[in-house]
Length: 276
Image (cartoon, rainbow, N blue to C red; front, side, top):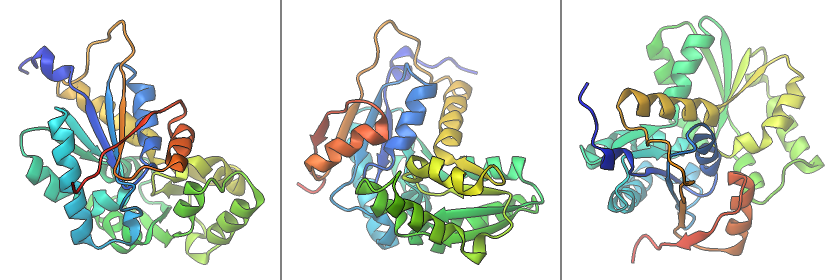
């Protein structure tokens, strides 16, 4: 395989989401790839993508990619299930050879196919993700005999955005969703929204070890790590810790506060309006 020029490996990884939920993916990527510099864009002016039309999500995604390409990103990771479902093919075509494009759906589908062949797996996510049927189509294409049971759980993402987790209110909402007959008899549950890792512990407590809770952010991070290695794109380990950049299309103090929770460390948000 041809070796990659050093300047390409030193370029950042671009990560984008409809808001700050994708920071759970960025955090997982940062954990397994501490030498990689991240450029994060949260389209907070247009969240949530879960109830937007496909055309709108595609328009936002293309605009965000313009910014990430300007920042010389070598890889663009769509860290949003709704955008991965609605815009991945279009974004890949739009970006062309300027960067590699990855999404959060394909790695988890591959993982489910390998680990749960012939078994029943549950999925929770936004209306857009569940109604798009993208997971079902991709899992059926694997022909691994996986029975997928999907449930839209639209209250969970806004609840987490507002900081309502690890308390009685969130416990009640989570329980109301997880006791839905659709999710009966599942061997594993896919957290099909990047917000949900923040309530993984509560979900795991509900299942008491009877059902495996699959945190897509960890699976995606390992996929990115493998992808960089296979394509000779991994940054060389350096002495200095990379400085990440975080942009949002609409700035509020609450986002800055929540960003710390989602990313797990102090973060400075820069305001970057998409349409000006």
